[in-house]
Amino acid sequence: MSSSEVEAVKEKVKEEEIIQCPCGRYISSPAEYKLLYLKKEMNEIDILCPNDVCFLRELGFIKFDVDDEGRLKITGASFYPPFVTWNTARLGTDKALKLLKSHLREIVTRYIDWARVKADVLKRRKEQEERERAAEEGSS
Ligand SMILES: [Zn+2]
Image 1 (cartoon, helix red, strand yellow):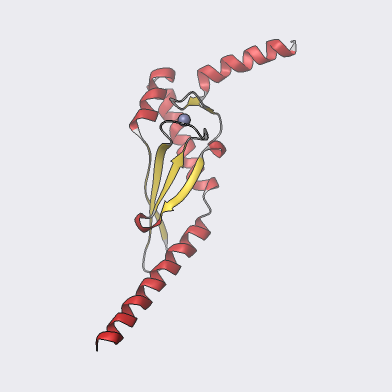
Image 2 (image 1 turned 90 degrees about the vertical axis):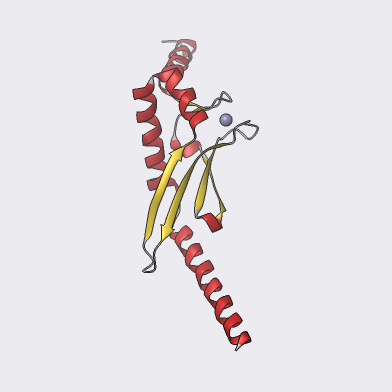
């Protein structure tokens, strides 16, 4: 095949099998999402579109918790409806949901530095306890 034919085939595979953001950006691998750990107080990580000028930006989220023994637990992981319906309309429900589920799973298992997230949660918890203790000592 010539290189233009190869490109044409790639293009076709792209349209049929690949997750797409409503902004037009194809997301062929879960590695492409941007992950933002900003809502720290809420123990939430945002999943963002790789396109910097995307009008949706937030495509999903992952929520977690760290218990008193320091064990980390995922309490929720989901893509938002506009992103999901866009893809179920394009790829069919079964295929789209399967792909999106595998993306979520890979984000959770491969692309989040959970050790760092957990260390951050524990550090903030400790700081909070120290503040409370200092406040108690101050009031007695
Ligand atoms: Zn987008």
